[in-house]
Length: 132
Image (cartoon, rainbow, N blue to C red; front, side, top):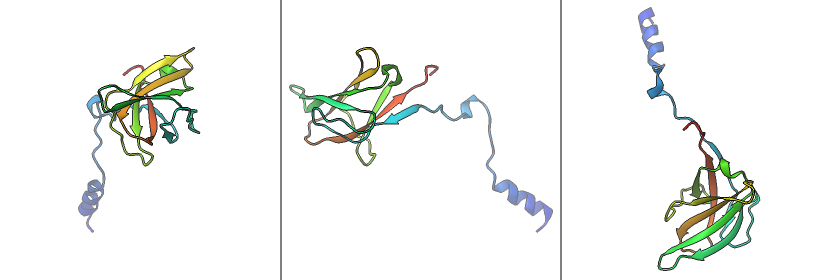
């Protein structure tokens, strides 16, 4: 191979690196996930101690509200994603409520999912950095 061919071959294998704010990767969010939870009042998961506190059907809707208490600082939960035991997203009927409970060392969550018996799911608790 000629020197020119070697230079072209080595350049071809490298991606151009751009700099600047617009090209920066998005900031990472802190994320923690519960173990599988069963929608049964009193059920406590074995990761994070998430407990199903109550389940109620919303009148006139095909929605059930599932109350969950998790012993984690309420300021550390800004967003919630619900996923199946296999990790597939579960569509919520509306955005989950996030509530501080007691002295701030517990967070209360109210999910709004389609009516269904035997729901099993995990929660992804997402903490968005304050500078966002």
